[in-house]
Length: 364
Image (cartoon, rainbow, N blue to C red):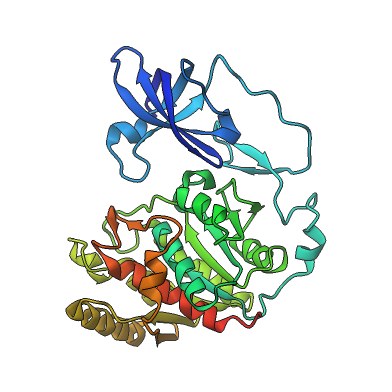
C-alpha cells in the first residue's frame, strides 16, 4: 500500500455514495484523481487535507486506476446513530463496516428469508464482466419494458457498489429496482451474506422479474485458464439452479479485442461455462453485424455446448430491437475501454441474454 497526503482542490463530480476529487499531492504538487466513498469518509471539501491510498494510481491500473481517500484527519465523521445490523463486510481490513444484512436476525425480512428456499423459475442472468450489466438491462426492457430488474453484485471486483456509476445511473433512471451486494461487497440497497440469499431477497423482498448477477467493476485476470475472477460466474449459476431459478449464461464476446483468447467468445466464458459449470443453462446468441465474427461466435458456441460438462442450450435471440435498446441506454456502454460503436458484439450478446431472460419470466 502506497500512501500519499494532499489537499483537495475541487470536487469534479458526485453520484450516490461517491465523490470524485482533484487532489494536489504534498511535496510534488502533482494533481491526481481521487475517489471518496461518502458513506465511509463523508465528502471532503476544497482546501481539506486527505490521506490517500495511491497504489492503483501509481501502478496505472485501468478500472481502479485512481487514488482513494482513506481518511480526513481534520474532519472525522461523527458516529452514526445506533441501529440494528452486525454483519461485517470488508472484514478485518481498516475499512471494515458493520451493516444490516437482509438475511440476518435483526432484519425485518429475516423470517421471510429463513423459510424461503425457491426462486420459482425466476430468470437469473449471469455475466462475467460488470460492463455487461447495462446491456443486459437494456435487453430485458426491449422485451418487457415494465419488468422489475434487480442486480446482485458479487465481490470478485470492486467491493463498494458506489464505485459503479452504471449502477447509480440505472437506479436513477428506474431501470434497476435494487442493487443487492453479497459476500464482501457492500453499499447496495440491500446487503446479503451469500449469492443464494441475495437471489432469494431479489425475488421475495424486491419482487424482481429478472435478476442479473455480475461482479463489481474491475475484473481480475492473469492470462491463465483458471486465474480470473469471472470464473465465479459458474458458482452463481449453480446457486440459481439449486434454488430453482432459470439459469442464463451471458457470453463474454468481442470483435475488437487484440488478444486471441478473447476473440469471439472469450476463454473466460469457455472456461466458466464449459469446464466449471455443472448445471444446465441457456446460452443466448444473436446476429452480429460482422458476418465473419457472427460465424465465429456461432461455431464457438456449438463447440462450447459439445464439450461442456453441463447441459448447455444455445438460444438464438432475434436481434430486432436490441440495437435501438442499446443506443437508448440510460448509461454509457463501455467494456475494456471500447464503446458500442467500436465493438458492438459484447453489448449485443449481453442484451440478447437479457431479452431471453425477459421472455422466460413467468411474472406479469
